[in-house]
Image (cartoon, rainbow, N blue to C red; front, side, top):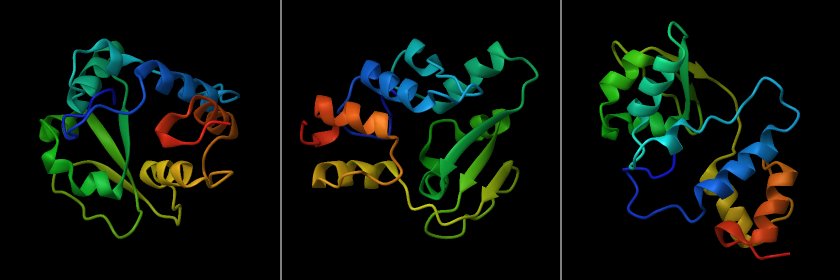
Length: 154
């Protein structure tokens, strides 16, 4: 998400920096690719537009939207969330509680005890935790080298 309509300020890293981190994280994962659809659309980043554009590019494909329970719980705050739910099947990672199903919304709920979250990772970076759990080592090196997210430069 380049510029979330639900956040009051712009992200602390650029789109190019985030793309570089994603490319590093995807190295060796031949099945995964970085998709820049969100960056091709005018801001703010509406999830329904990304899903709509992806559906246009891949007609007939089944689309999935991966999210944590925290985002699932706030889905009604998203712009055109009902439309988005017609375009995708949500995959909701259970973190910190049991997600409640929504009538008419396709969703798969994944159970586990994965504590990772972007908020926690950014906190660990600022706090000097090294290595940061659940963060790709090459990505962490780039973050520390460039001092992203308030991490001390190395």
